[in-house]
Image (cartoon, rainbow, N blue to C red; front, side):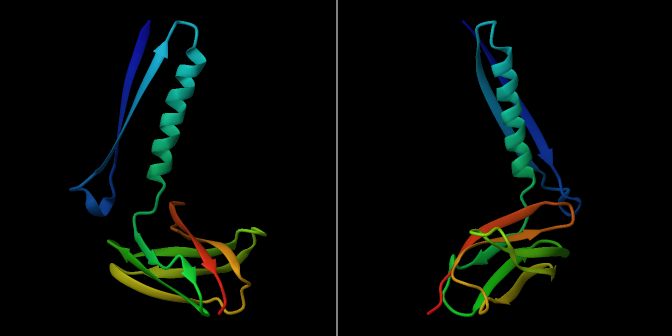
Length: 145
């Protein structure tokens, strides 16, 4: 019985935070009986995809309620750098873009509001994305009073 222990370490650095890199470590323990090379490669691939998914998360803090009961969806964005973001609100039932606009985010706290009075009740996916494709998303439930 043989085991393969593989530890992958990835460093991600932002140009504005060179002094504090984010470090991701992924450890894979794979049983190897000499015949399962495909399983070993699959485990390594899955681990790499997990790290890639983590690295594609937008480095901002998004604060909002999960449920909106009035006509205005308010949210706050906390960022350590100035950037331009694309905001999308996607209907989860029909997968249609219900709202789309560019948001200029400054360093620190940023407050925004979106008029949702014309949207029907239901679940929506709220997505913020930067120019590199990194994004953060949150599920929002709209219900009218």
